[in-house]
Image (cartoon, rainbow over all chains, first blue to last red; front, top):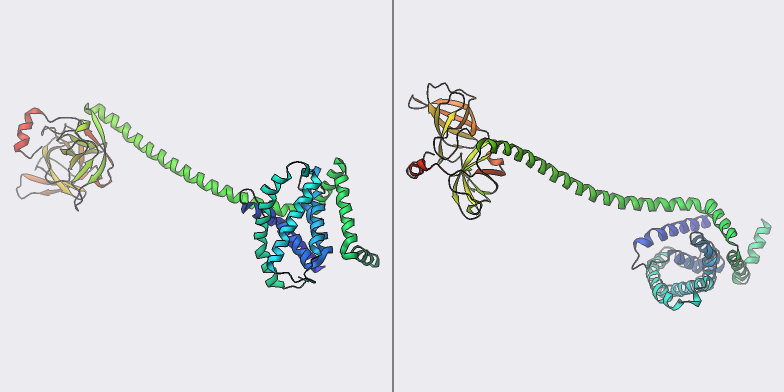
Length: 162
Length: 278
């Protein structure tokens, strides 16, 4: 229960960062996705069940503040990411920093592709969207995740009970 | 409790595959909801779960907007202060110019406004440089004054600048008159903020009397105020009293001057070349 409250507080902090810090450090309208970093971290450290549960919750939280006709799109995308990344749980695999960052990049791409598919953008100009939106955002998020992964490793090591 | 544990175990089976399918179905269910259903879900979530988080978010955003507002208010404050100072400066200038208009009516000579751009570098203030010269119609020996009274005379002129010899300069001697008793004497420079004058004794001049120009020298018109008698002292010769005069001007604080475009009277021009008394 205490762990859950800790994670919940972390999630609130991440949402606060996403709505404040992200826009402050935006670079040509490209913002890092701290919520996705949170979901990936949870999935890597605690496995697919927690990963997808937090993915569902995080995605739903994003959906609540998104246009109402897209409700559920981010929920599904984040749930899929949480489940997929959770398969590479740190308890069983020893991942170095570069691999984790690369994994986050893949998760970012996966998340956006699922989202585009669900909201129906795939029929139109998804290529342009990937080049102008997804790729820059992916790189920026990967860069921002480096200190997060580093600090987590320094603070908690590989323990899943962080 | 047992039911809950069984449920968790069931959902976690196959690396969470069951739970994944369940959550995916929930997500797709959200997608399939009607518009009204979606609105109900969002409204319920916002009002129950997200409201506290939202207040935290709005607080941080409010702090941020307050910071921006504070910055912009500081800039506006600085701009308004500058505008206020400019207005004050303009208002003071207006008061001075209004007084000048009245002064101009009395003397009936054209007046040129000049700004002090330099002063003599020595310890004793004797000279100003002003930003008006022969291009502006300024000539040597024109009287220089402010609304408080006489300052001196133009001692040399270049095209765009002129040098003003102040009353403080001992080299400038001019004929003065006690306003109350009408007795005439001489002003002969001064030091610091005091002028020295000589006036015939036994003519009833007292401390507090005002000295004005007598108009006898041919340069300064009659009646421009100079200062008040601060102290009286008997001279070596009994017929002369030395006066210490407090000028109406604070010479060190002057910024603008007025030059009266009055040429010296022709009768006294020849005398001026040989006589140092103006």
